[in-house]
Length: 105
Image 1 (tube, rainbow, N blue to C red):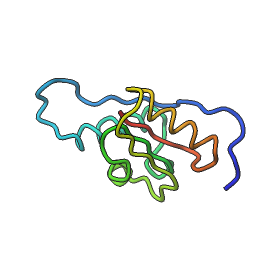
Image 2: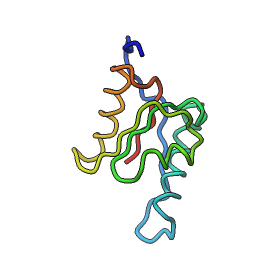
Image 3: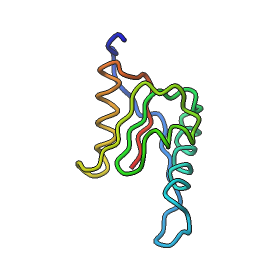
Image 4: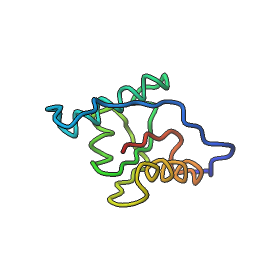
């Protein structure tokens, strides 16, 4: 796969329900945030070929959102808080591993 040229942009942001006792599972919260981010970006799951997470399972998130085929994914367990999945996604795009990536935290 050829290396990406040009700049990388964040084109959508999504949030899930926030609270201590929402009654929602991690999967439900992930689906909420991912669906909102895709809508904000004007994209569908089919447009995504890379997934990065910090906590949770990247391939499970990809499956829930209809992202297929995924050419790159990252499941980070530890790292610099909220920015780590984004940095991983930027690096993957710049390296040419994927073209459009969604990052979760």
